[in-house]
Image 1 (tube, rainbow, N blue to C red):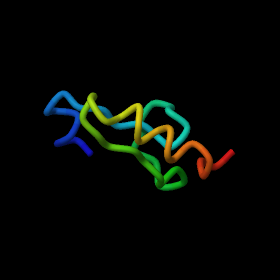
Image 2: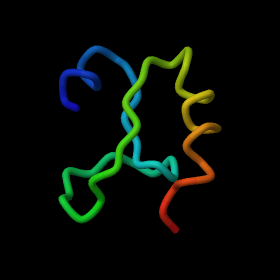
Image 3: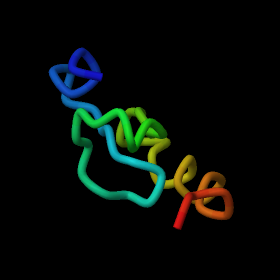
Image 4: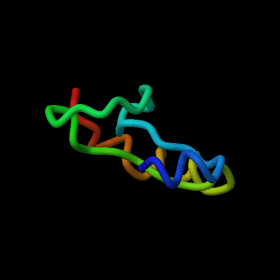
Length: 49
């Protein structure tokens, strides 16, 4: 995840929240900014509440 962030790309949890190094929240979205919004749309229905 750090490599993605250092490259200037986006890392969040499934709900779009800030990426925190936390084992309890182990589902993350890592993407470049061009496809991030589309990935979030696809993952939104399965995002944990």
